[in-house]
Image 1 (spheres, rainbow, N blue to C red):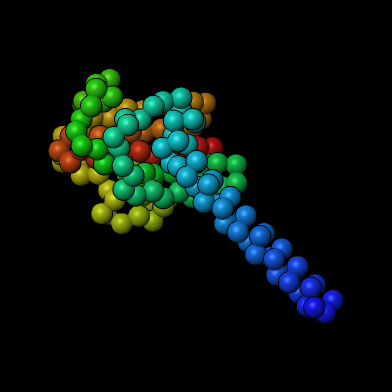
Image 2: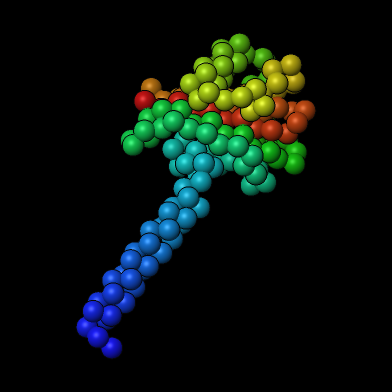
Amino acid sequence: MSKKKKVIIIITTVIVLVFTAAVGLYAAGNIYYSSQRIYEENWNIELPDDIKEKFDANNQGWFGDGVRYTIYETKEQSAYFNDFESKKNSEIEETFKEVFSELNLSNSEYPDWEHDYVWKQLNRYENRLYMVFDKETNTLFVAQLTQ
């Protein structure tokens, strides 16, 4: 085998290995840093075990500042939601409208405010987390605003 052929094989092998490693790291990072895990770590909360992510959108910058919006489906209303507020809140509804405007989302991802819902707001410094659980559809809407 000529020297030129050996060099080409070595370069090709290195390129394939680098590409495979990059794809593997990207996939592992997306699995490890799911939106659920990000919320749990950032807010020191534990979301219900049976939730399944239906939708996720964000415009967060390099330092995590910005807006993240996620929709989860669950089979039933669990005890997790017992300490949520049950009185409808126009401020929460207005905040979700702002999130939708900022992320340019369609109405299909929007909570139905006519449904019976419970909500919770967490604050950490100037950052806010809003959770709204639609009791009729067993859907959890989460909006995180970070500065």
